[in-house]
Image (cartoon, rainbow, N blue to C red; front, side, top):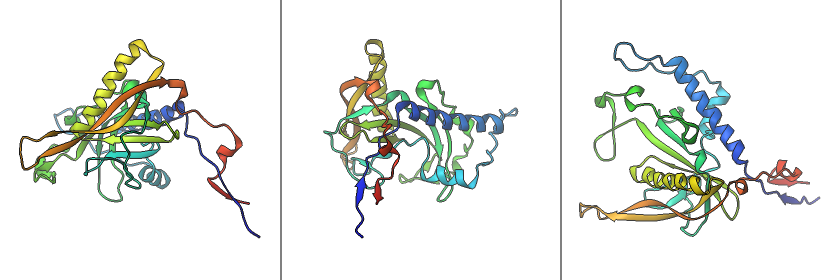
Length: 257
């Protein structure tokens, strides 16, 4: 008997669901810091945080960290915006709704293959304040690994996570960046959003992911590509990440009969 396959399109979670997911993770990290990192009384560095997660939690944090909503986008070494799961380049003509008020910021430290990273991150628009770099420990540069530039590389990285929703499909992405130019691109968008709040508080900016650049002062380096998040319009907040409450939304993508 021949089976028939029905493709069912999953709808993205709502903006409120995304917010709750990210807040829960930020609160978990904050609770770990509060419970396990007492302020030094003698000028020393903070103690290491014991990992009390279950094996299931460790696995889920490794393969699907809650701070990454949807698919991850990075500005790659070739100077292009691309999804990290399949290296597909995102063209500069694709519209995204920037869910700016769900932006996460903070510090992350990678602990090697197979080990989950340490994070001190939270929602910027929920009042999260980044801790001072000096409070995180790992201050002895002699123990830092050597980076690609031949210099000691700080194990703690300042990262920004910007949630985006593709306009033509509703699919969700998270642009993750730790570079100076990437953080500046997000920062420019956040300034625009703050101005929007005074005149259009019920709207999100619509953006496109472009590639800019500059001529490096060292001629051997040449033209340096940089990420640009170009604002091309705006849209109602309540039109973003709408849920699908139909029965089909609870089914698998491909279902044999």
